[in-house]
Every structure is written in structure tokens, then in C-alpha cells.
Length: 370
Image (cartoon, rainbow, N blue to C red; front, side, top):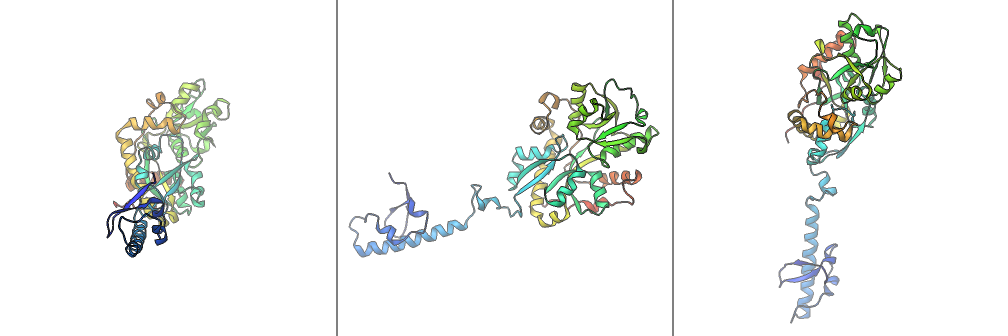
């Protein structure tokens, strides 16, 4: 049976084959239909013209309306300047909110498609942001403030992670002769990126032990590779975060030498999301959509650890058992200039900045409520 579309008009009800409704309907098309019972030829001709006009107008009006099927019309129904964005993230707990937002449909609700892209650290992500390889990226605040002080046009667009006790530690092999931080004098320490929060955090502990950065050698190594590289003798110690703290304890027999989030660095804001100043200005609605989705995910992460545990095995190499026992920091939902100023002030004290930096100037406007 031919599929039909019912059209009700000025005359008795009749049917028009659906194939004609997919394009403007001509009178010639309608003449092919069987006549109504007892319909005179002239009446049939007028009926054809009236219905053809009615169907064409109906199709035109339908084309002006929105669509909810995910097609081109609905893809930008929220007025976003850009609907697909690439977001840089490390395979660690800090950026879990981007994966939660994706899994829970928070991005989709905002009309966004987010493509997570692996990075090794905030310092290396800055040129990727500048070149357009990434739209938004995870960054640590030390790298961001250093880049801004160096003339980079970078904006912080959302908060991500604040450290807690034993979230970032210096680790050594179980049989290492190094017993205290003071024993690190003359030794090589792996960090994920040079001149970032890793080196700053380690320096605060060196200071307590009577040492300075000149007393050690820092070398770069991505977090996933640190354990094996240290075992191979490429370095004496490593600044390590979860899930690699737990992984290196269980797999390599490493032990904690020192917690670097104590004293001056207690509750230190660690990481956030950044974009170039140009990108922020060019895509304000896209940014606002990202901010709203991330804020919802941050609130969920901060209120329910199970959400984090369920997500970690999906984008890191950590299994569910390990995810349930690792040490985590906190997940703030909004950027707070007063908290972040602590980072900039520490950087000034340790020579990472040559002059004071007002972090308010680095923070992008928060998302609108619309």
C-alpha cells in the first residue's frame, strides 16, 4: 500500500501520496490522482491548484521551523558560535569533570560536542591553545600565570582542582638511600613539566629542608612514564600525583618521601581550564555553554566521590579497585580570585614572576545564566 500523507483543505478530505510532499507539489502531480466521486472536470482542476498551493506553503513554513532531530537546524539552536570543540586534558583525576559532563549529557544539553585531547601539562598546552590545536585546555595555575607574565594572551575560564593532603608527593624507590628531602641534594627529580606547579611545590619543600632549586636537577617526564624511568635509574625521585601514586606503590614498591601540599602550599589551587583571549572574545556563547556544563560536573564531582571513581577507569589506566582508594583533592565550581592570588604570590616569592600579578585580570567573565 502506498504510504500517504493526509491533507485537509477547503474541499472534502482526500489523500496525497507522500512522495509528492517531499518537494513542491504541482497540479500535474495531482492530476494523476483519481477523481473524487462525481467531481466535474473544472472542479477537479481548481482543486488541484488549491491543494498544490496549500502543500507548497505548508512545506515552506515547515522549513522555517526548528528541528529536534539533531540535524543542522538543531545543532546550533542555542546560538553557539562553535558547536564542536577540542579540549586538552591529562589522564589524571584533576580534569574528571569534562568526562562527567560528557557522560551525563551536560555538554549535549548545551548544544556542545567536546573532543577530549591528551596533553602532558599546562605549559605545553599554551602553544596548542595559541595555534588553535585546542579550543580549551587543562592548565595548572603556575604555568598560566607565568605565560601571562610573559605576554601570552591567556584567560582562565573555569576552575578544576584544588590539592589536598598527599595528592602530590615526592616518591622514591623502596630501596632508595634517600630518606629525607635534605637527601635530595645533588639528585635528579622528575616533574611532568618544568617551571610549573610541580617545580614550585617541590621548591617549597626544599626550602624547609634548607635547600633550593639550585641544589637539585629537575627533568621532564610524563606522569605515566615516571615510575619505570625512575626504576631504570634515569632519576632519583619523582613528583607524582594520583592515580600514579597508588600505582607506583603497588606495582613498583615506591614510597612517599614528602607531601608537597603542606605549609605554604596547603590547599593550593592546582588546575583550571584556559583559553586564548582571542578565543574567549570570538566564542562567548560557546564559552558560556562550556562553563555551565563544567560547573554542573564540578558540583557533582565534589558531592559524590562515586561519580569520580566510576569515571577514572574510562580515561586513565587506573582500575576500579584503585580508583576507590586513591587520595583526591577538591573540585571547586567557580573561579575565586582570592584563592588563586595565593598561587601568584608564591610564584613571586620563588622567582617565577618578576613582578606582582593581579589574577583578576586573568579570569574570564563567568557564564551567563541564560
